[in-house]
Image (cartoon, rainbow, N blue to C red; front, side, top):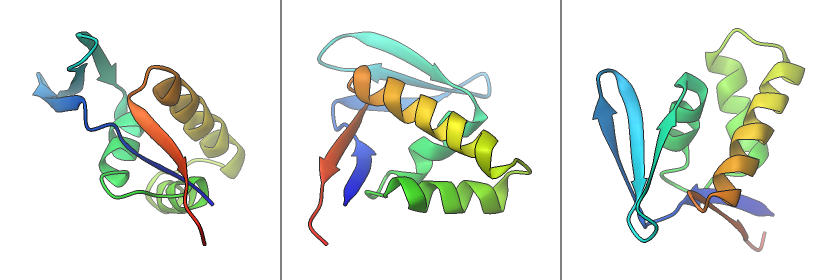
Length: 91
């Protein structure tokens, strides 16, 4: 099963009510929208895609399709930018 977790090279904090992050190794800064911020909070401990979806669907007033698209888009970009680590965890 694939799990998503934070890259330990990322430091984060709030600035003017926005979640901001910096990749220590690459020196790049990133900002998060509310959904991205919540996903970031959730993956403090590794979570599967489905676990993330289930939690967000219970917290946000969105359709399953909209949630799926937003979560997939965020995770794809975050993995690509090395903010989030996707790893295979045995069941």
